Image 1 (cartoon, rainbow, N blue to C red):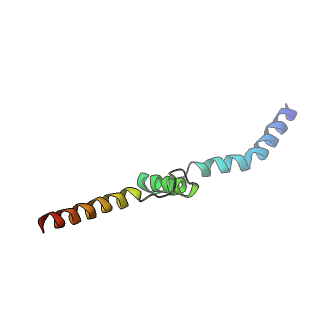
Image 2: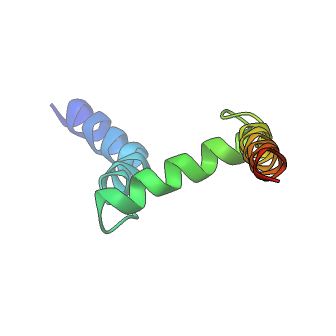
Length: 77
């Protein structure tokens, strides 16, 4: 019986740091789900998941509008 008690105490002492870390893992560093989701998106952007930022659609739309304005001005003149 004393041998089993000694083994139990030794295991309990050996597992103490893991038990403390497990308790800390349950705590959340974010105060809301919005902060958590923003952090996920930020990390994914930094990792390049979403790809490079492309503004070609905005440039194409601007060029189309400019062309239409010039064409309309020439048609009215």
